[in-house]
Amino acid sequence: MNSLYRTMLFVPGNAPAKLTKAEIYGADCVIFDLEDAVSVQEKDAARDLVRTFLSTYHLDCRVGIRVNAQDTPYYEEDVKAMVPLKPDFLRLPKSETAKNMQDLDVFMSQCEKEAGIPEGTVKIVATIETALGVQNAFEIATASKRILGIGLGAEDFRTDMRMTRSEDGQEILYARNRISLAAHAAGVMPLDYVYSNFKNTEGFTADVRFGKMLGFTCKSVIHPSQIPLVHAVYDPTEKEIEHAKQVLVVYDQAMAKGSGVIALNGKMIDMPMVTRAKAVLAYAKASGKEI
Amino acid sequence: MKLVKAAMAGTMEPSDVMVTVEPADDLTIDLESNVAKQFGASIKATALEVAKKMAITGAAIKLVDHGALDFTIRARMETALKRALKEGVQ
Image (cartoon, rainbow over all chains, first blue to last red; front, top):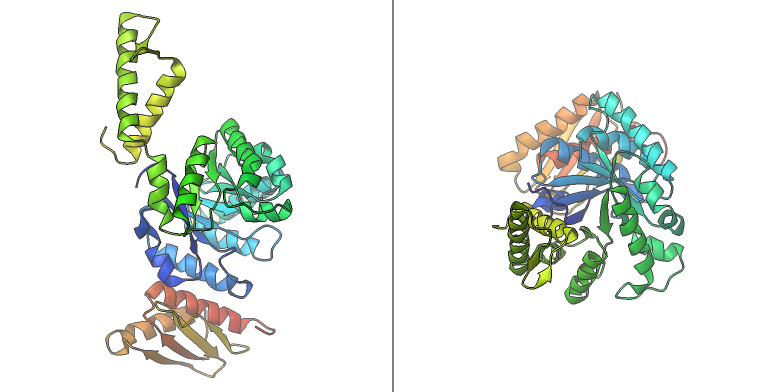
């Protein structure tokens, strides 16, 4: 298993064939969905199915579970049933305030205690889907030590904001920016939103590239075909890897000589460039590239 | 423990199993499966194990199997029995 979270693949929780195939597509993380992908009549069935599946199989990738929101009658049973399975995280929809996260944190601690699991084992990913949630992004991201990342639930956000939907997502630019900023400020993972038109691969790739420009390090995906497209955008190119190596060689040489001014191919090298070069090589290594 | 009503769980999709349970005096299992010859005994044993674990003493269980793995049989059995133990309309 690599250490990256480039892709989170949503898998409907009530479909046995989809559960068993979930990890074969190469996503860094799969999220078993008990929320939107499951009809209200089948919430109990999905919970039982995901539980028996994860009790039987160990997946060679990160595992998250999207539980139902706190204002639904399914939330408590979802959390109680899922925490003992020790997924990497629970993903909470409709995260609007710090209190939402703190309430979940306390409840999870209680479930961990009952299951004999060390407190804090299971992390939280917050999905922000309302105007209030976007406004409170930083408070949400810092509300609990369990917070692993925050991301935008774009469809519900558009509905809450009475937005008109565009293919390239212009209307959600501010929310994406604010969530990326809040996540970086809080030191948690910024998760980019689901691009639901999975047949539009060009539009999707452009959207992933733009998300990367905004600082996102992870994309939520709903179709296996989207996974390699995300990895191709997030993974450093050979050119970027070569440049990063050169920056670090020049930097190390300058440090050895005690030189204060560093240049590569006529361009000054400063500390942020060195930091980025190190990050590029670490990412390349984690994604399995030769460096 | 006795069931209070009939209930179902599962689907007719591939890799799934449709479980129907009804109140009865004894535990009985009826299985329809394309692989009954090879795995019938194992499927029935799994279903029976779930019922016994839930302390069910009377239920007429019908399984229509479409290639379900063990974890699916267990989950669908559990869901059907829990639904059948609850009062009210399903």
